[in-house]
Every structure is written in C-alpha cells, then in structure tokens.
Image (cartoon, rainbow, N blue to C red; front, side, top):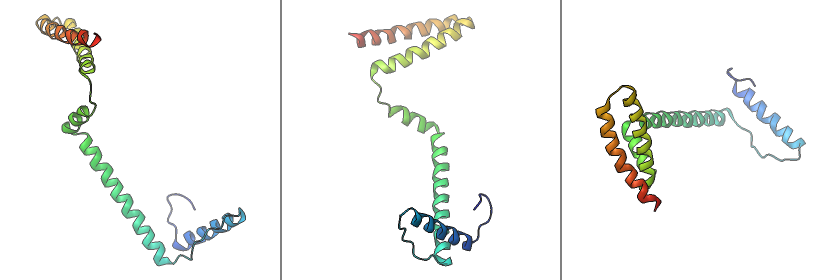
Length: 128
C-alpha cells in the first residue's frame, strides 16, 4: 500500500492477511479473527476521531502556550532560588546598561546602577 492514495477495505484486509502469513513464517502466531467491512469502518472512524481530538488538543495547547498568562505561570513553576533570580536580574540589567550606554542615556544608566547594587548585595549574601 502506498501513502496518500485511497485504499479500499479489501486491500486493507488483504494486507492484514498477508502480514499474518509473514508472521506465521517467522513462527509468530497472530490471532486476528476475520475483519468485516463493518469492523474495519468502525476502526477507521475511531482512529480518525482520536486523531481529530489530538489535533484539537495540540491547537488548544499551542494557543494557551502563546498567551501571556502561560508564560508567567511557567516561569513561576521554575521555583528559582533568590540567588538564581538575582543572577537573571543581573544579566538583564547588564544588557540594558550596555544598550543605554550606547544610546548615551546616562540617566537610565544611573537608575540601573542603583538596582545593580541591590542585586549584587543579594548575590554576595548568597555566597556566604
């Protein structure tokens, strides 16, 4: 059977029977009662139904994951220590400091320098 082509129920049943014969040659006894067209259609409906549900769940998860709330909740689940949060804050402040220095926004640099002193105090406390 090939991908992306319509396959009849008879072709599927023939393929199942062929696989049963191959397994039998290998010494593996596969017990599959004869599958009727009705059984095959019911199975196909169940498979498609589950695939649709999975796709719906995936779309929902992607949508929720992109929301602002999801980001803040995920961040809270990290359970960062005070020192880890201070390191993250220090990295952010250093990046901002570099940006503001390049733009010659020295008032903002002064504010960041004050915040950086607070962060450094937390980091020094964590090393003791």
